[in-house]
Amino acid sequence: MRFCAPLREDVAAKTFDHPVFAGVRPWREWLTAKDWPGIAEMDAALANTTHATSGNRLRVVAQTPALLADGLHYESRILERAAIATRHGSWHDLLNALIWLAHSNIKSALNARQVADIERVGRRARTLGQCALTHFDEAGIVLVLRENARLAAWDQHDWVGLLHGLEAADFAVAVVGHALLEHALQPGQLLVGKALVVIHPTPALGLPISLQAIADAIGEQRILLDPQELRPLPLVGLPGWHPQAGAIKFLQSAPCFAPKRKERRYPPALTLSESDTFSTATWAADNRLGASNAAA
Image (tube, rainbow, N blue to C red; front, side):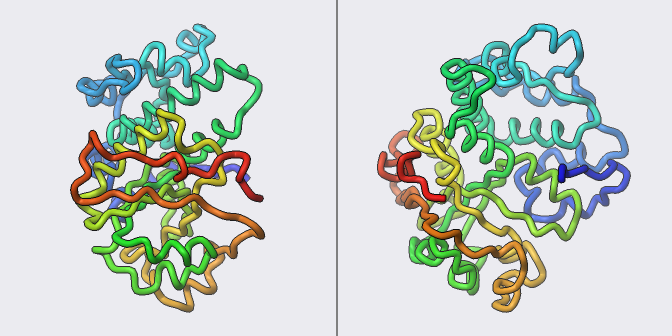
């Protein structure tokens, strides 16, 4: 069933106090004001933001019949003209614009990869890579963990082993998926993000470099070649994200904590050190799960 976002007037301002919205908090007024932000206002906020691949200044433009008459694919229009077609009064499109503001490096890499595959296979076909890119664009998160030890539990969907005892200093998270934010407009949702994982000894400090390393790896086609690379993460298990987060009974019984499907496996995390910088962080070729290795 297709998700139907609530009306603007039905979303309480306190909804945006939840940690899922932390990354877009600088634009909180756009989310809580009585009226929708105008297209021109949103475009002005992007005045100093360029597309990391094309170098063009990004623009928010109204999605009108006249705009769509250019015949360009939505993704191609962004890469070629830096124009993000946006519907006024749409939660989905507003949140998409906010993710462009917060994570333009990742959004640019996703966009350039989508266009490359569109040009390679045409507009009617979809590659595994396009599916992976779309899943991450809509529901993606970046999770930085302080240590690698919990990954073995995650590999088996051992949610107690992964999340019980996890403390705020042990992780940092950035929400990249705008559809995930849209679903969070209805409090009480048992949200599940599609995660790329980084190991860094100081997660909060390591988050910016982790995001850049992921953007680089996406752009260089070293990750997101198959949807199976993405690890499901029930966000309500993170400390501070749900009243029962970390409680063993909750982790064992809530429907979002699904068992692992037979033979499903995940790639290792990217590991960064304190000495890594934006210019030295790399994602090794064997850190991805290629399409030929993907399990059901």
